[in-house]
Image 1 (cartoon, rainbow, N blue to C red):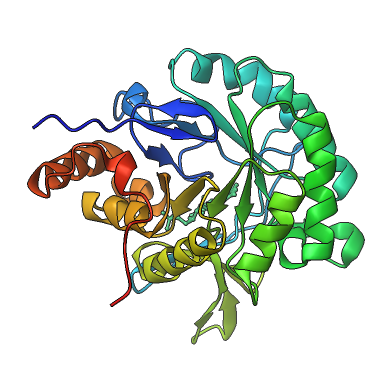
Image 2: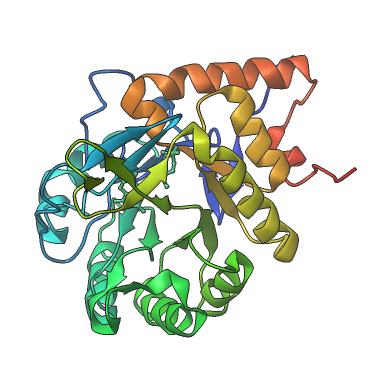
Length: 306
Ligand SMILES: Cc1cc2nc3c(=O)[nH]c(=O)nc-3n(C[C@H](O)[C@H](O)[C@H](O)COP(=O)(O)O)c2cc1C
């Protein structure tokens, strides 16, 4: 049986549902020496802001059982340098390029979205709303529907391309955040960003990573991410969802599709095994063959309770 892995996400045709997750595969072609990047459904860049950012001082990464805490601090070269240095190489891959972006306040967020939307090589934007809003005491945009909705609305006005909003799991109701993003005009949702957590170095009596907390990713987070996808899909069955969190095997991809995601992103697994997307895609196809799933796009959201 030949498996047709193609899916359409917010109007973007993808040859398969597997993408990189923002921040785990660089801004450009750091992964290119490891595998043919054009096999991916899409490439998602590390987050970019209008001005460059140096990020946090080390330690920025801390391993946990089955996970990773990161506090990179959104280091990036800024939109102009990103467009000049990374975009030409990404565009040459011939696959959809989704640029993850953010701002430290609403004006800077809109400026980044507007500038990136003008670039022909950018297929779609993924808005990271887990960034602290410096004008609101550092509380992330994506934790208050009353803040999130106008932010997405303002970005929508300057963005003629597909606009995806990447939701934070660190909220009481992800469905309320999804509603705010959709009311603001988002075309699709990425579920989810990292879960806040920390570790402690008992010898130095210091919290880790450096800022005292970080975002947890990796296999430990998969059940949480899967539930968030299912909750958002149940509330908004027609909304395109990208599932992300802990994916490391082909079977994980199918779990996210069945829970309601149209596509998925692979993050921490790439840090451990840079060629992971190649293996995950192969395993996904083999599993679809075994389970007689000819068109995986047709099984999206078909998992049931009981
Ligand atoms: C080192 C690192 C850097 C990240 N940087 C970003 C980023 O810039 N923007 C963003 O939206 N998410 C960022 N993320 C979150 C990932 O895109 C993803 O949502 C998360 O890691 C969960 O997926 P995973 O378990 O497959 O890694 C980062 C994650 C890691 C581990």
